[in-house]
Length: 241
Image (cartoon, rainbow, N blue to C red; front, side, top):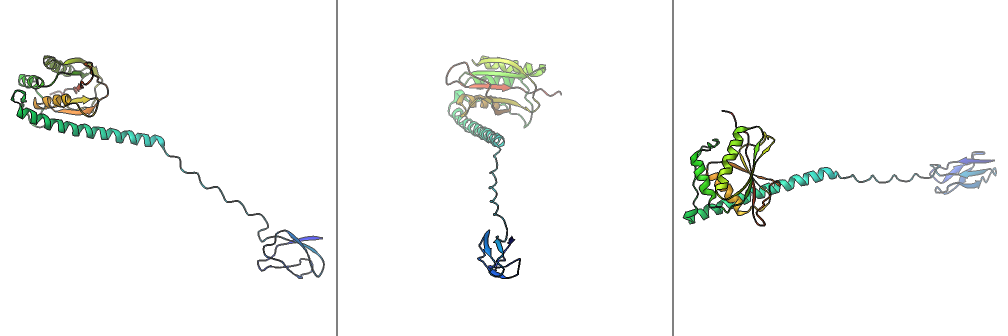
């Protein structure tokens, strides 16, 4: 009769039939031995009695969130472009101021307004803006106005007449859905670095008593050929008095 017994870690085992001591190496696994006293066949097994289980596979690396990374990348790129636009406008304004101070025939006319004061679209502002735009090489401009706002439409026509007198190609006014987030007169440019003429137009509006807000806009395109600057003016809804 064959009997199975698990040997202790000491390297000795006891015959389950007669109790005699059987010496065996602790590393012996499933080896048949015969008891030296009663001749009983004993099968030796390791202490665990079974093969060791394989180690579990390592956990898979986390899958990167590509959508979130792409969104963050687009936001970072847009913020960098806006910062570059603002820096370019500051540099261009400083250069334009220096040029007007050294060239009397291109000196800007400045209209003094209180901070936060809404433009009056007065004859004085008409004269100042016409004078200031005369020193800027004529370009193409698109004027947009919020739909359903007669006052903003009238102001858009006011700007159109002045830019056309200065020799600009004017498209519009085009009606767009009202945007409550827009405040002030917005001057958009489609690319960076900002062309000198675009910065000069910004300065011409600023000197005439307006507060243009520089923004990036990929919509406007110039029709006057290579090297020209396409601009876009967006007029916000006019607040009722």
